[in-house]
Length: 236
Image (cartoon, rainbow, N blue to C red; front, top):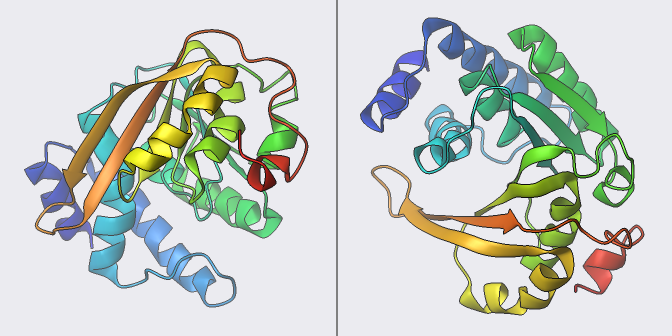
């Protein structure tokens, strides 16, 4: 796997060290092992994992500069995407990986230990609860999420974690102008605005990907996020 991942990244201007390649191999092997007993990913074939999980997670660094010492939270990280690949690639950036399913968090804590990652903490919580905790609310420079959800819902989950002037980066499989338009009310209420809409294809494929980058221009009202389940049932 290492050679394929190295070549793909090198060709697309992402450099990985021997140590990082080894960490990706450990992550891959353990994910495939644990996927037999818990539902982590439907993508298991090596080449597909390299492209659709590892490279896809890291590709944001071509468009956004994660500065050393900054704090990033991955909301709804699932099996660790994009958080773990980014943490391997950016050892001087601090990452918090949050998910509502505790068995996924236990898996990720094992990944962090096995890979020797010193820049990652894993938290079992719902976004609606953790974003009300003063330790985490408006403490992050960047929030990333590859979670599958309506954009208005994602904004309500994610924006409260970010400092004023910080950025939320939503990984989307397609760009929906309708979804963006429908999120205008959420953007206004949560004090954020779309700064960039980046569209690209995964290398040597016709698979479309999008990054939606939202900048937070003011502090978010304490009434957001609303209580558990409400953001999904009644998007802003």
